[in-house]
Length: 167
Image 1 (cartoon, rainbow, N blue to C red):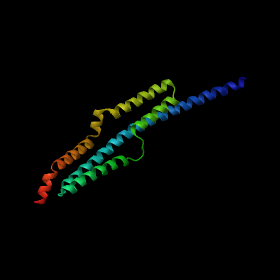
Image 2 (cartoon, helix red, strand yellow; image 1 turned 90 degrees about the vertical axis):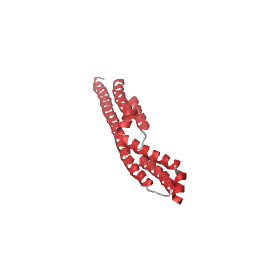
Image 3 (cartoon, one colour; image 1 turned 30 degrees about the horizontal axis):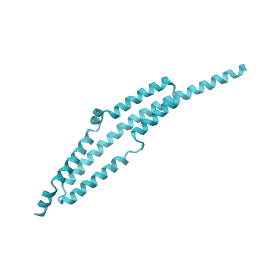
Image 4 (cartoon, rainbow, N blue to C red; image 1 turned 45 degrees about the vertical axis):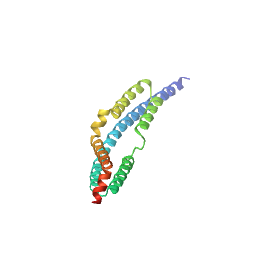
C-alpha cells in the first residue's frame, strides 16, 4: 500500500503539468487572436486603398449605365476580396472568442480561468472599441465612404449624365 502513494502523487503532478501546458497554450491562443485582429484591420486598410483607386477609375467611365455597372461590380469584387483574402484563420472573431472561452472553462482551474478571462476581456475590448476600430481602420473606412459618396452622386446624377452623354 505504501508503494502506491508515489504513483498517486505522480498522477496529480501529471494533471498539474497538463493544466500548466493548457494554460500556456490558451494564453498563446489569446495572443494569436489579438494578432489576427490586428492583421485583419491592416489588410482591410490595404483593400481600402485599392478600392479608392478603383473608384477613381469608375469616375473616368463616361457612359452612365456602364459607370453604374462598374460601381456595382466593384462593390461585389471588394466584398469578395475582403471576405476571402485573409489567409490562415477562417473563423469569425465571435467564433474564435467562444472557442477560447470554452477551452478556458473546460480545462483550467478557477484561478487560471480568471487570469485567462482577464486576458480575453482585454482583447475583446480592443475588438469592440469604436475608437480603436476607427483608429486602426481609418483608411478602409474613408475609402469605403468615398466609394459610397461617389456611388450616391452617380445615382443622383444618372439622368443628367445620360442627357449630357447624348449631346
